[in-house]
Image 1: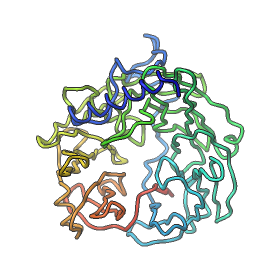
Image 2: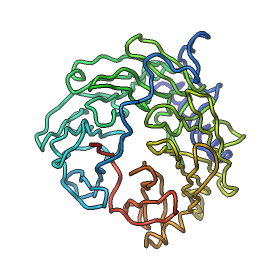
Image 3: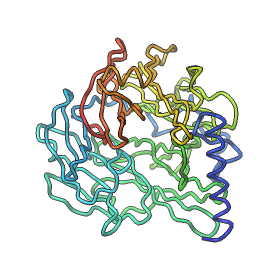
Length: 413
């Protein structure tokens, strides 16, 4: 790596950690740090006027039928039903990370869920996306320099990005397709960032009948580490696959932390060394904006926002302190608000630990909704390797255990 590459990476890492310490929010993008992507023309649609092809997902409200969990048995990933009972297990040899950005359930599930294709990323003996169908495993496509993926719920459609350091810039490619087209798919869009080394990251896919029509994406930080809680994202964009047009819905001063299932609501926070780091949600069709003030103790800001499938609720994580201080003082809380305004639940880690029967929670985050009012939360217990899932009723505030293991994804009927 050339010296100027090294200096730029050090600069970005120091900047991100400085913002984390000073602002409480480790997730963002400001104009001065925007990647070198061409801005949309003035006559392109704004948030209140969706781009052609970015329609809301009118087909149906999708509610999970099962949950895919990593139980750390070194064999595979396990399906659980909505009552927390194991159903069946996919074998995933060589799986890189048991994480939603590395795994996609590529279709709807039936009583025998492992007959639904599961796509997952491996690194050894080569970087590749594999497919498991009823425990028959084959390679879908080689993925050198793989970064992350995002799938369309209950469809055999996914987008993934790959990154490569070239000369004085970070090159990231966005690739999209289905099980038939991905093996020969070329990048639909490429970003070169020679300032802050941000990479393309797909957030959601607009697809119908197994065919991708458009990609919602952001620019995200690549190759940094430290006491980071939330993703660093800059702006919200939509790429129309039919026309090849790009549209920017939120500018690079907003860090997207959540997106509704029907593509109408986006949750974001400000990216700045100082300012208001509370959560803001915006309806991209109507332009309605709702803000949720921070808890006074939340000096690490907000992230990981999830909308219920009917868009009535939004849940998020707030945090304070640090895991890396001389005496670790990190604490967090899960809050739930109404998209019409107002916070209805505010549960800190001590309360959730006690209600779930744990002596201590060292980290937690919401991961999605089981139904219109039941929130699923991933928690790490006394030992960081002890991972479990708990559920929170948004109306009553009740907390209960769900299952041991790490959340990997939702399966839909």
